[in-house]
Structures are given as structure tokens and as C-alpha cells.
Amino acid sequence: MAKAKKMTEGVLRESAEVRFADELERLTQADKCNPKPQGWLRSPRAVRQFILGDEALQITPKFFGDDALVDRAIVTLLGKQGLMLVGEPGTAKSMLSELLAAAISGDSGLTIQGTAGTTEDHIKYSWNYALLLAEGPTEKALVSSPLYQGMQQGKIVRFEEITRCPPEIQDVLVSMMSEKQMMIPEMKDNARISAKSGFNLIGTANLRDRGVHEMSSALKRRFNFETVKPIQDPTFEIELLNKQLTVELGELDGKVTVPTDVIELLVTTFQELRSGNTKDGGSIKTPDAVMSTAEAVNIAYACALEAHYLGNGTLNAGAVARQLIGVVLKDNADDIKRMRYYIDNVARERAKQSEAWKAFFDASREFWQ
Image (cartoon, rainbow, N blue to C red):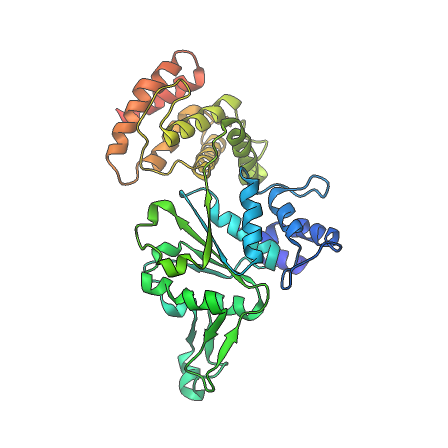
């Protein structure tokens, strides 16, 4: 474990199994009496503790807002069906799939990234053509995909943004998910590999992208679908944002002052623009841009960096207004009108009673007028 830590020193983002290695080790030690499914490193109970937290074992909660969804996801992976996590962008689908893979298999890196350029080779296998020409289609010449390795080793495989792949590429999965086998017709004697116990597939898809390449009915039947929803409770989202900001700041934590009213303003703005309803009972049009908790954390982190390196060390609402531009202004010109309405009709009134909202309103007028 120390060797793994040393190899990842200085990297921007460690995998979950490295980042939480100490917690996983504690869970493993405490998990000896719990029944483990064949092929799983840890019991379903320990996987749940890893994701949702356990104070007694000093396990930090990592996924928030829907404990029942985590339970259903774990149960799905115990069976023959794959798990498909769908939802709006930024609702932590990828993070949940990574945590599940890390806790169950100890390896969250067996990942296929779905794109318009994803080919059948990316899903199954390809060949080292120099060896192929020299030796023919042998195991030595075969270049295995993450799915191939997952079946061979009995591990969880992650397929990100599956609906971004063309339908004919998606459907490569149908027979493999049903038969749990992969044929290799190029090799002699009808070579094939059969999935070992512990293998399963976690897919993710954004609801906004489902129309890009709709999954076929045959493929949908191979998965249980779970919808990951945005956080609805503002108090809980504020608490989560503060926790995540502390993690993101790392060594800068404590060197930047983060006023409570500014974080409340940030969460309120996101909740209202996400839902289309203000806390005062008004209605507004929601922008097409993604207003997720992950985006809110990104804004808070950017504002904190600005405060530390370019400001006076205190995160302020004016910086929130400036950073919000990069989130809202994506590709829809109508979002400018919607933000202008929000600034003129909601932020303006609140600015009369709150210093934070006044700073937010004053900075916003420069960009949205």
C-alpha cells in the first residue's frame, strides 16, 4: 500500500482505492465475520459502510442524499443484471460508480469512456499488429480491453456515458451481458473467455444525452436503471458544499475565510435556478446550463482560489457572480435573458437587505445587463 501511495504522489487525482486506502483497510479488518459474495473483496455491508460512512470505524460518508439508492445499487450488482446510473449531469453518477468498483473489486480503473469515436475494439479487444503478423492471433498478440480484463479477473467494469456511443457499438454488450462470455473468433478452437464471479458492469448516462443515441430495448433489459437526483434540501446542500470545499482546498484550508452567508447565497442561487422556483414563492425560467452541486463546489473552489491568490483572503459574493458566468454561458443565448431576469427581479430585491446579495447584484449587473 505504501508503494501505491508513493507512485501516486503529485498526481492531480488519485483513484478511490488509493485515496481511501486507510478506510478500506479498516473495513477489511472489521469485515471478517460478514458473508462475502464470491469474487467480492468485501461484504455488501462493508461496501455500504464505505460509501455512506460509519462513525465507529472512522469511515467518511462519500455519497449523499439517497441511502436507499446505494442499497439498491449494491443489491443489483449482487445479481446478474448490470447497473445503469442515469440523471442530470453533475449528480455524482461517475463518483458513485467509482466508489462501488473500488469497494467491491479494489480497482476502479477498468473504465470505458463512451464517445462518438468508441469502437468495438475499445469494448472487446484489439491486436498488437507486429505480434499478430509474426505469430498469428495468439493470447500474446491480443490487447485486452477493460471489459475483457474485468471478465477475466472477476471485477466491476465501468462504462461512462454509454449513450454517446453509436447504437451498433452499444449493442456489442448485449450478448456479453446475457451469456457472460466473450468470443474470440480469430483464435483457434472457438476461443472464448467466461466471466469469473465478481464481474459486473456499471454504466452511466446523462438524461440530457439520452436522445443522442438511445439504448436499444435489448440492451436496456440487461440493466437495472437507477436515477441519481439533484439534492433538494438546501440545508443539506450547504453542509455538503462546505465539506467538499474543505477537501478541495487541501493545504489552503484555514487560509481562506469562507463566510456562511456567501455559501448560503451560492446554494440558494443554484437551487432556484435548478428548480425554477424562488424561496419567496416566485417562478423563474431555468437555464439550460447544468446547475448541479458539483458545479456549485467548482464555483466555491474557484472563488476561494481567487480570494487567496488575487484578493484579501476572504471569499466574497462578487466572485460568485463572476464565476457563475462560466457555468451559465455555455451555448444557449436565451440563458442570458433568464439570468438577467433573475438578477433584476430576485437579486435586486434581496440586495436591499443583505450585504452578500448586494455584492452579488452589483457584480452581476456588469455582466448581465
